[in-house]
Image 1 (cartoon, rainbow, N blue to C red):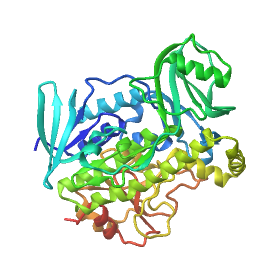
Image 2 (image 1 turned 120 degrees about the horizontal axis):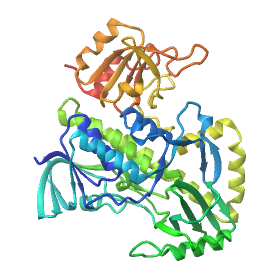
Image 3 (image 1 turned 90 degrees about the vertical axis):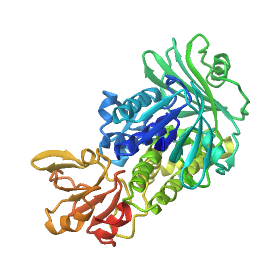
Image 4 (image 1 turned 120 degrees about the vertical axis):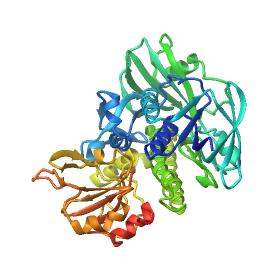
Amino acid sequence: MDASVIVVGAGPAGLMLAGELRLAGTDVMLLERLPRRTGESRGIGFTPRTREVFDQRGLLSRFGELETSGQGHFGGIPLDFAVLGGGDLAARSVPQSATEAVLETWVRELGVDVRRDHEFVGLTDDGDGVDVQVRGPAGESVLRTRYLIGCDGGRSAVRKAAGFDFPGTEATTELFLADIRGVELEPRMVADRVTDGMVMVGRLGDGIHRVIVGERGAPPRRRNGPPPFAEVADTWKRLTGIDISTAEPVWVSAFGDATRQATEYRRGRVLLAGDSAHIHLPAGGQGMNTGIQDSVNLGWKLASVLRGTAPPALLDTYHSERHEVGRRLLANTRAQSLLLLGGEEVQPLRETLAELARYDQAARHLAAKAAGLDIRYDVGGGTHPLLGLRLPRVDLHHRGRPTSTAELLRPGRGVLLDLDDSTALRNRAEPWRDRVDLVTAEAREAATQAGPLDGAYAVLLRPDGHVAWIAPGSHHDLPMALERWFGPGR
């Protein structure tokens, strides 16, 4: 084997997956057809959920001081993420190029074999492994791996070569995006519906503004490259009356509202993550964030199967958990597309939804959906409201020093948090100590404020931070939960 896992595509999803696998001790090769990062800003910022994920891997501090915001929208209907409670807000004005730079530095530190200027050509899955045809600087070669992961974007060559079905709808409209310098524009961070379409403006720093414009009824065009900036400026002036034609275009792109999802995320020894598995209108920047979370879900499971500590059936939960997340993502972005770009026939629906958003419960529901905080996995029956959810960061005291659940998750292992200093509990979990950290700690919650672990004496966290078992409140007993997620004890 040239590597236990080969990941194709060094975007955010591919980099995150390579890091997760390497953190768990798996040897990984990352192939990328581009010789160097493009430096294009692409997605800007990340959601509260991705911010939590970066925190639990110790990556958040690498971004420096982050500009955060509670302002968001659902299809142009303003939302305040503060309604969700807690301190985590969305990170703004972080270009995707910066996110990729942080992740690539991390994976190289972990020892991932990163091979740029290596293009995926084809594959053969023989059931015992995958032969991967690659074209690199020295010509074509064949690499052998136990599993191949396609993280190579919406036009995924891996997906096509492996024969995945990718049903959905074609784009019906085209939108423009441009990062420009040399003009001063008022921010419009919430998508602003105008008479004939939608516009947005965000400040990226260094005198650069990002403009997004979509003209209702503008059909998608076949293009061999980015649209000319003059076309973007003309559309902007038609919709807003503002002339930006004298600005310097730093980056220009076009995108559509095509919506597709692979019917399965795994075929034999080939798997998909990120845009390779699902494409949609990039409303609220959810695409990059969902791809990163695909990778965090898949990485520890595949590593456990490769180590032989968990049965292959654990890998099946990647599809069952993340395909449903993708399906819901496509539903909410299609709804947002209709709200943003639909005509007057949609106005009654828009007004009704705006009215509902004034109620806290409805506002929380929409904000959680847009922020990626509403994801709950089926981890077994029980009554505790945290079961299956990702545990928010909780500050703790452990061995006489302050720590947090985010810090305990940084090694990428499971964590059994013993909040009652129970020798019996730790003895029951002892057979899993080689893959689950047993931590006795106290929650540092303020006496006047109820915390998420109030009333709990123990909680089992998967490596991705989701609650797999909690007491009291789970119907399964602890050994059953440990075996389900971490394989038989030793």
